[in-house]
Length: 285
Picture 1: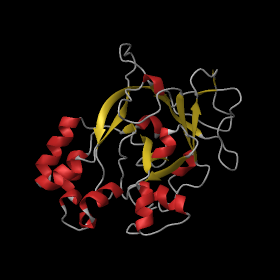
Picture 2: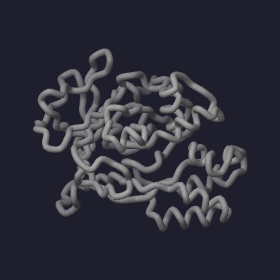
Picture 3: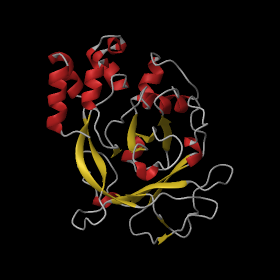
């Protein structure tokens, strides 16, 4: 993840001045979730990757449509986050679960995740919870504590907001936003877990996945209705299986995304999320 100063410096080094300013105008605040080393007792903890989740007694362990237990990816304490300006919930806990079968070596890279392959559980502030052991039929990632850092994100070159601000020319070969050096400068060396802001896509902006599902089917990215719908969606959370703590078998080159419409996020309707993923190749959504 990049700081504000780093993002501005990269844009001004790699992009023409007019493109840099219009692209930077689209940046959004976010929260980076950073693994905390074992033995660090000073860094404030805001959640965890893996481990046992804490759930209310009346919430069953999330399962796939055919009854297999989902993996607990992460839990985040919203009240502990530096949420100023990021539009994130400011209370309660968010718990993220996913079907590990999505990452088997023989998984079809062009197949979108099926319904029931992931789930978000929101536990309101003050609700009684208890630690749950993973069901016998399931497996679990080891627990890794998470800290939070405020950061800034900017959109990929094929983000619907970029089309709106800079036009369709951004998709043409040779456009500065498509340059490999620019992409390499933006990429960070660490696994990228984040809340809010813009998603980091491996290819094809994930907002179009959510928009197509919302409209009842796929459509070309040039379709005005699809673009308008895509602009309504925001990143709630992204988890990076490049982190070995949540990638102990199968395909680890996968990013996991939970998206939500901006109006649903503002109203706290956290049950209305959309899950998708990206692999380096295929899965064009």
